[in-house]
Length: 109
Image (cartoon, rainbow, N blue to C red; front, side, top):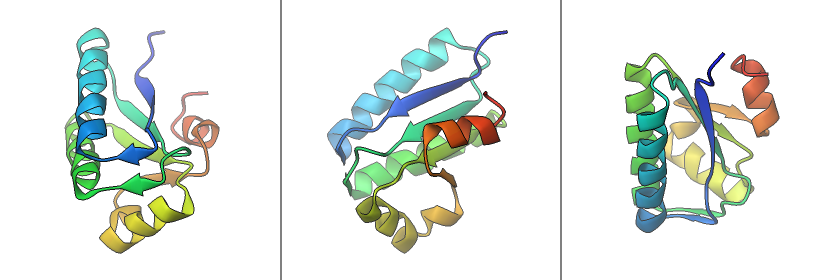
């Protein structure tokens, strides 16, 4: 059975530059994996999210919703979780303590 999810490690700073790199990585995955449904973003090493980073999260979420999929956020540090709370994104995304929990919950075990 082909994988229908991808796990992407988010760098220490999710700003405009990092968001562009993640978009490039994601576009490559989408080109190779036609049934890609879920994106699991590992935020465990990320300690800063800019407005461009927030925009990336929102655009990715919209894209995967169109594919009837999910963008899951995992391992958010305290600083990043606070940004997600303030922006209301903690209610938009499925949040997990780590990638293993996300994979289990999304049925990718």
